[in-house]
Amino acid sequence: MSSAVTSGIAPFVLDERLATSCHRLGVFELCTVLLMNDASYPWFILVPQRPGVREIYELAEPDQLLLLHESVALGRALMATFCGDKLNVAALGNVVPQLHVHHIVRFAGDAAWPAPVWGKAPARPYSATELDVRVSALRPHLPAGFRPAVAG
Amino acid sequence: MSSAVTSGIAPFVLDERLATSCHRLGVFELCTVLLMNDASYPWFILVPQRPGVREIYELAEPDQLLLLHESVALGRALMATFCGDKLNVAALGNVVPQLHVHHIVRFAGDAAWPAPVWGKAPARPYSATELDVRVSALRPHLPAGFRPAVAG
Image 1 (tube, rainbow over the protein chains, first blue to last red):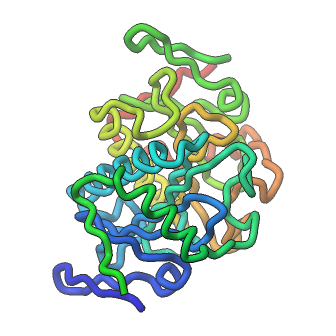
Image 2: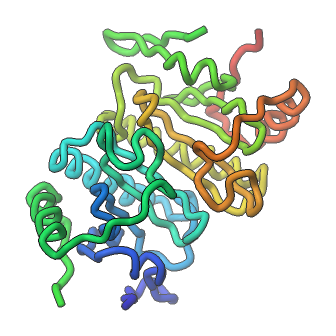
Image 3: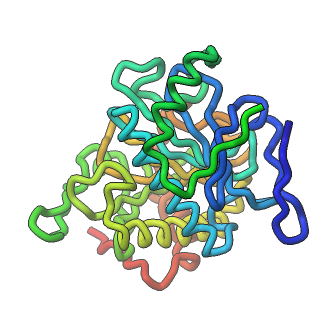
């Protein structure tokens, strides 16, 4: 189910394709934090909660700075937690134009290495245990500004 | 041939694989601006001129802000020039770990659409005329801080 966050006149609504393909972990000041439901990689997505925005340059400048700040904080936390060989950060949006920024921890020898992850291997949905392990590992590394989603 | 920019102790040297696969267009304050030698897409790359940096979060905070500023300026200029359907912005680096940020103008129906461009179609090198047309179109849209490379 999509949630709406009031922002000025129009509400922000998470794109249905992101909502159904991801677990919603919580929010930073600007962005909703998602976990792609593909246990093949630690694959997280930041979605600025601003309606109608497709490109980073369309964000107001204070929001661009918030996105940078949250992306850097998440990227550092991911690499500290999962000790990957490389972090992939990408705003593509050819299929889902709502602005969203992938943060994917990559390992030499993972299911797509060294290619980008898109279209390489079918998504492997998390079991409840795998999900708990992955999210619990990350939680202590996230900055104080992160507010976890209410379970249920 | 790679160029070196002195920065503190170690010099910055553009990765040889980027140097050989791209045309060097010029520099912003932080980044070298490259054009991927693949006429299939308007595909530009920003490379922060800082030695040894692989991830955005490894840049000093003032450099993170410069990268954001230059990425936003380039992205806006690209979409104003080429009127694409979507801009793809990505820092991957699985093959070339030196930090570099792709900016690719995408069109519905282009050689890889809607997939990401990597690994989809063989690069189609520019003719001299195509190169001149593409770069000349972009030039008036680039911000004042851009300094073109000396031809030769």
